[in-house]
Length: 279
Image (cartoon, rainbow, N blue to C red; front, side, top):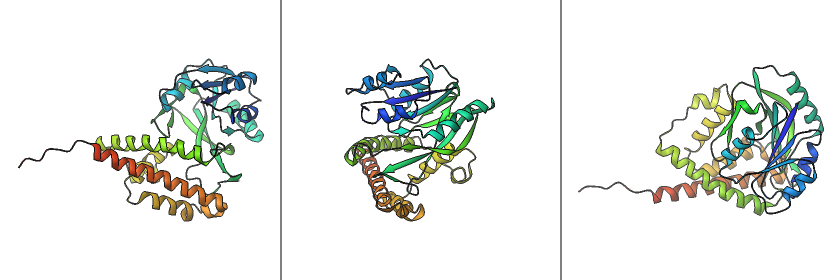
């Protein structure tokens, strides 16, 4: 009833647990970006079908996974290698797929992020993600922090899946988000040059969750002192302090990430050609 797609690049450490969590599925696919470690060997040994594709962008890689692999089933569960599906969630997913009407094209789940073994229950800003879809009716856009658009109804499931973004350590997380911040700065510059408009009304009251998040992020990028605003919002607005030291650390790391984006955006703006001023 459900196929599984796992995207990988040098994931020999995290992939075994991810594969074990979807052992109930008889059609697991790994789309690998030519890993240089034992990722392919691990996936093959677990019985997964491995396809390798040169990485040419986050959205395009995910779209290739959606539309270019030979799935057995009409529903597809999308995972990263550092994510795992608990047993009760697996049962709920299969039941949802079996009973979904034709109008339903996707299901949204809550993701539980962990840091130092602590679930960041309060610190997570946006923990809801569409992960179970009819692949023919879904497509990714936006190159960084990709957005999955679904043609049809999206329903919410109450159960969760687990995410371990710090499984490779803080240094790895910072290195990855250093890269992400460069991409976010470039995306901001493009939106600024195109004079894209973002609606406060849509950000607050839009019916579609993905659309609300898009406008919220666009408006957030216009705020002054964003790193401080983000830290204060996470710690006091989201009550990250209730997650203990892990919650405070996570809020601080997110503020650092936001500061990276601010610095790189200013750098890109300085590099832009300046208009000539006639005397």
